[in-house]
Length: 84
Image (cartoon, rainbow, N blue to C red):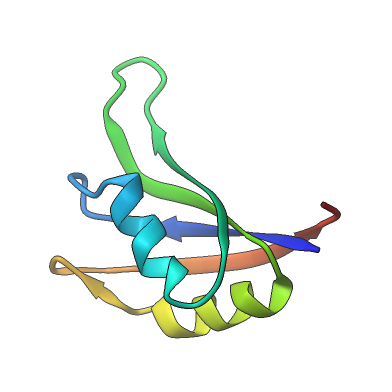
């Protein structure tokens, strides 16, 4: 079962590769998408991470909620199970 994590309060210059590398230290990241404003294309400081297990998502949430990334404190929200 895979799980989604929403990452908030990202520095606006954060790349999806940087977030993927960070979360890969906990488990397998199936996908990482930075959310952009549809009209301007500018980053919103939010990412959606899909991890390959609920366990990995839980540990990632525990480790990175409150993590300082380039002076911004990350907020990691909810895991939502989804069948693969």
